[in-house]
Structure formats: C-alpha cells, structure tokens
Image (cartoon, rainbow, N blue to C red; front, side):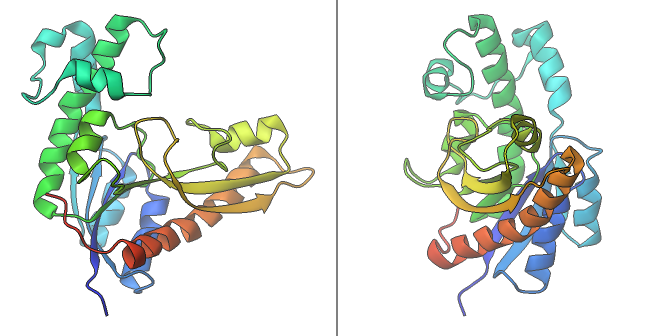
Amino acid sequence: MADKIRVGALISGGGTNLQAIIDACTNRTIDADLVFTGSDKPEAGGLERAQKAGIDTFFVDYRPVIKQAKESLDRLDIPGDFNFEEIRQKQKLLGPDTPADRVRTFLVSRAVAESRLLDAIRPYQIDLLVLAGFMRTLTPYFIDRFHEGENTHRIMNIHPALLPSFPGTDGYGDTYRYGCKVGGCTVHYIDYGEDTGPIIGQKAFEIKDGDTLEDVKKRGLELEWQLYPECIRKFAETVGKRKIS
C-alpha cells in the first residue's frame, strides 16, 4: 500500500466538509492523514472539530490586518519577498476597472496575512492543501510559494455550484434564483482567478418544483460531503507524494 499523503485544511466556519474529510481519513476511505486545520478566524467552529479529532490547529486572523491596511499600508509588516507589480500582473481577482488604491490595499494586506499562513503551514510538509469553507481568496503571492512549479496544482477548493456556472460566494443561492432545475457542487484546483481552476469532480441533483433555497443547500451539502473525500482519494492515487518545501 502506498504511503499516506499529508493533507492540511483551511476553514472559516463550522467545518462540515472538514468533518467529512476527518471521517474519511479515520475510516481509511482515503489514504491520507489530516495533519492540521487552520483558519482566518479564531472563533471558527471547525477548529474545535479538529481539536476533538486530535488534529493540530492554528489561526491567522485577517481582520486586524485588513483594518490596519485601510488605515495605512505603511504600518504593515510587508514580507520582504513581496513584489507588488509581479502579483498585480498575475492576479485575476480584481478587474482592470478596479481603482488602483483598492488593488494595492487588497494585495498588500493579503500578502501580509498569507505570509503568516505560509509560516504556519511549512513545518507540516504537506502534499495537499484543501480549502473546506475557507472564505478568503488566495492571491498569487500564496499560490506561487505553495506550488512546486508553474503547472502544479496542490490546492483544492469546493464550490457550491456546477462550475463554470455561478462562481463566487453564493453558488446555491445563485443557482436557485436563476431557476435552474439542476444544482450541484464542484471540487476544483485553485488558480489565480475566482473559482476558475481545473475541475476535479462534480456531483449534481435535481431541483424540484416547490423546493426552497434551504432544500437546495441541504441537498448540495450532502453531496459535498461525498465529493470532497472522493477527490482527495483521486489525488492520492494519481499524484502521489511530492513534498511541499
């Protein structure tokens, strides 16, 4: 049997997808060890789930960093390897019409927070990072320092819609309000855009007449809990262990 891959998770909330991954690791549905759970919020309920399972936890609170950035970028401890022009040219999160000061504030504040995330993650030498309800977009600063090469994908995300339809933060809501008769969820790799990376797996369900938005969310979540472990297993089987330095 191949060695288990080492997986880390980032969350922002209660961590129901995290729990599905914990359960899959525990019952050996996937050959993986979940070695840490990190969050951008110290109060995230998923941290307690991880602690109960004996998994290391940490947090990097983005909020004071963003607040400080809005007051003055000069007060931030900007990482020495941050190149604003390089990151600005690569990023696809903010459009060309976005005011220049907003772009600078966003990218600089994220680099400060992401540098702290990377410092917390590196000692674990993980093979795969999964975003399990992590409500922060990752910039090229983080992605380039985590990946091993230009065409290497080692960060997964789960999205509550059938991409490429309905990217963004409210996939189930957008699906429901549009009047779709089929909803679903997608696991994809992270790239420089918002929900634009290569698709790994999808699951779909029928939206019936009379369904409420809560019905759609409930049905979608149940599929998410199946899909994410399946995609991690696929990664473990096809990509294998190439350590992140």
